[in-house]
Image (tube, rainbow, N blue to C red):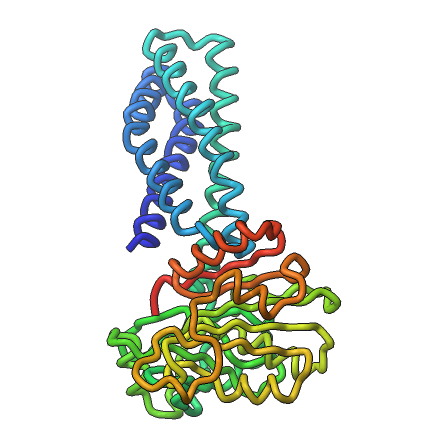
Length: 377
């Protein structure tokens, strides 16, 4: 809902500024003074719609981008203050000044100087808002699609969690940690799903909790061989390139999915990078890919798995690992130097927020923390 409100308010703002800008050019090139004055009056009235729309865009964008380190999100967040300052300090005052002078018939040199300032400021905001809209489309995964991707199989990878395998489109490549948008042919529903498979794997694999949603019910019922659409890959939640610097991965539940691609890729390449995965679930049965991760940890001395089960009930003797929430004490027991690694965290919004606060309290630098939150499953 919040994403839709953000997109609608942004489209209203962009269209209004574009209308103001083009009507100004047309009226002043082809219109009379009376037409120019009328346009200025309409623009001033339009500000009472434009300003609330832009406030909604800014507030919803800040909320949607909170806790995310995606490069596209960061670019959008950097543009928004420029758009806001340009609008409040230039476009709004110019609308009042130009309307006042036009209604009084003062079409002098000062009028056209002010008009030039308004047109330049309007062009700047149109450009920045257009770039934000483009990046928003890219973030949604709806900017491009590839047909002819077929479901080739599925596996139950944990209690209530399934992995779906698809053929790769020609020329498809991705970086471990990226995601695709999957659109179903039966009901047109689509969802963003992290890529589980590593780039070297022949098939494209995603995984999801099988909650009771229209998308997931339809996905589960699709027979193998069905064609679906994918858009992407997208996202910048990827490992740093310096293999000498360790990485700490912190996952909650289905947040493990982008990390699976990273870990499989690192193992396949024989990298010497030290990776420690802290993986929190309610119980072993609900922990997706736990068996595979345990095998990878046994086979590779550079990969350590710290799995914790926080919802065990009854007899806990069968589980010998951690049972507490991931906190600073747990990190300190397994990491020789808290300040050395780059930290990556994926999971539900509350978990991501708590992890960010924990790392900040441990004096971890901002450029050593990368987050990706899941707002729904």
